[in-house]
Length: 406
Image 1 (cartoon, rainbow, N blue to C red):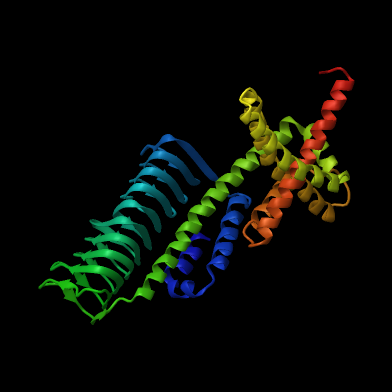
Image 2 (tube, rainbow, N blue to C red):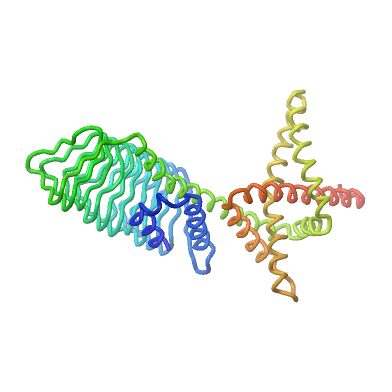
């Protein structure tokens, strides 16, 4: 799936620029969530201030890493998703690498495709397919070998390595001293060193004449086109998939976290969860009203408590409870939604709460990428979920008081 998505993004880029980016965003999101939730799909998640994958470690699944400092020296037989401040990759990656950070050093023993965004990016080593870089300073070391194309968008680009395919993109300064196929790039300043070898045309869009040193080899034509102000727009459009990628990564991580919370909630408080679901099913519109009232009254009450100072501790408690109930609202709505959908196909027998939850939360996640409908679903999910939780909790408290349990 990733390789197919990469073929669309990188090799057919002119087509992408003509397509509505919202459609691309939605399609890519569906692909990612389908892979994340499909049977047999495994994902290893590591998170800490500093994460290191030693050279003796072999991971047979995809790897998702969040940390300040990330050092991957071992072997990952799947894809690697790395988000951090300082990222170093020097191991073996069987799939592709998707990374974002302030400083990124990529020197793998092997990898398929690379998609990196950061302040300073340096790559070296062997890359079987395509490489796409977004950043302030981009360096392609002389030890670099790229099997297909290099796509670049950033401030400064230096190419000393070997690129079997083309170099395309838009940068501020471009220095070429390595070997590549056709070059089609927009840059403010271009330097073609004497050691450069371009197997094809050199197509530049620039306000300034390029500096081409004697000894440089260009087998095709050298075409120079003066830059226009309107041509800055494709550069911004080119960044859209990067933002979409990181946004999807954040969404998926939040989804995984919510699934974990939901499963724990069902396992530890099944009766309480069932009580809230029953309340939402039997008193649906009353739940909506209480949810609307809660979302208005609680913030006002908390503000008053903070204003009178002495109510500060209660105000803090109110914010905490308010946040917890709001977070749980989507879990409750997902449970009810999933149960109703499964009930359409399963007429007899007990419906598993776990299956209901996974079904409902997946639907809510996918609907979240549909414009306008996303906003409406979020609002009503919050209102119904909060209202049902407040009603069920209030009734539970009354029952406990009647039985003198509290």
